[in-house]
Length: 331
Ligand code: B12
Image (tube, rainbow, N blue to C red):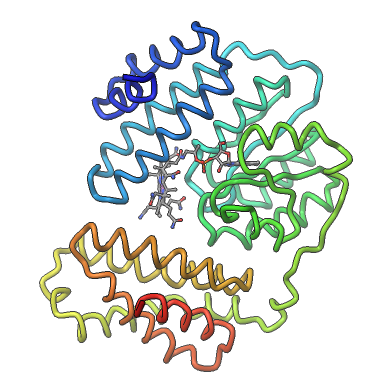
C-alpha cells in the first residue's frame, strides 16, 4: 500500500488521527509539506468527489472525509514562517462553499513565506473590498469551484483593480485551462504552486486585460437569471407530465430534482456569461453521470432543456447553448 492508499483508507474509515499520521509521516520522511498538500490531500479530495458523483459514497461520508482533510491541511501549514514577502488575503467568492481548495492554496502560500489571511467560504465582493480598504494587503487570491460564480469573480476583478490590489484567481470553476478566467480578464493559475509562482512575479501581475465580454451587451445573462424561478417551476411541471417516475418521488427526491433544475439554469447562465457552449455541455455530461448513477436516465434531461428552449425563444445566444446541450444528449 502507498501512503496515498493509506490516506484514502483513513478517509473511508473517518480515521482522523490515522490521516494526520500518514501526512506527518511523509513530511518526517523528507517530503515537502507543499507536495503532501498537492499530491496527497488534493487528489484524495478529488477522489472523494468521484465516489460521491458515482453514488458510492454518501454526503455524510464526504463531509467526514473533508473535515479530516481540513485538519490535515491545518497541521501541514503549521509552523510556516512569514519571510517578509507581504500579505495575501485568500477567500472564496460569494456563494462558494468549497473552502478546502482555497485553504490548500492559503497553506502553500504560507509555506512559501507569505503572511496569509484566510477569509474562508462565501465572501461577498463588497465585504472583501471594504476589508482591503481597512487592512494593508499586497495581493488577493480568490477561489471558485462552480462556474455560476463567474459574474461575482468579474466584479471582484474590477473592484480589486479600483483598489489597486493585484488579484489572482483559480479553481475548477474557471475551466480546466483557466479559459473563463481569461474571459473575465483575471490572472489565473492552475494550482497552488502556480499561485505561489504568479505572486512572486509582480511584473506579470501588473498586466491588465479587459477580458472578452462584449457579448454581455445583449443582456441575455441578466434577463435569463431574472426568469430563473419561473423557468424552474415550468420545467418541474413539464417533468411531472412527461416523466412518470417523478409522480412517485419522495420529498427528498423532489427537492433534489428542483435543485437540479435550478442548477441547469445557473450553468446555462454561466455559459451565456462567458459565451462558451462547452461550459454548458460539460455541465450536462457531469449531471447525466450523476443522474445515471442514481438510476435516473440522462436522457430525461432533454425535458427541462426543451422547456427552457421554448420559454427562451427570444434569447438567441442562450438558444445556441441549449441546442448544443440537446445535440449532446441525443448523441
Ligand atoms: C468537499 C466538497 C464539497 C464540500 C466543501 C466543503 C469545504 N470545506 O470545502 C461541500 C459539501 C460544501 C460541497 C458542496 C457542493 N458541491 Co462539492 N465537492 C467537494 C469535493 C469532494 C472536494 C473539494 C476539494 O476539496 N477538492 C480538492 C481541491 C484540491 O480541489 P482543486 O479544485 O483541485 O484545487 C486546486 C486547483 O483548483 C487550484 N485552486 C483552487 N482554488 C484556487 C485559488 C487560486 C487563487 C488559485 C491560483 C488556484 C486555486 O489549486 C488547488 C490546489 O492545487 C469536490 C470534488 C473535487 N473534484 O474537487 C466536490 C465538487 C467540487 N462539488 C460539486 C458539487 C456539485 C457540489 C454541490 C453543488 C452539491 C449539491 N448538490 O449541493 C454543492 C455546492 C456548494 C456551493 N455553493 O459551493 C461538484 C462540482 C461539479 C460541477 N459540475 O461543477 C464536485 C466536482 C463533485 C463531483 N465530482 O461531482 N462540496
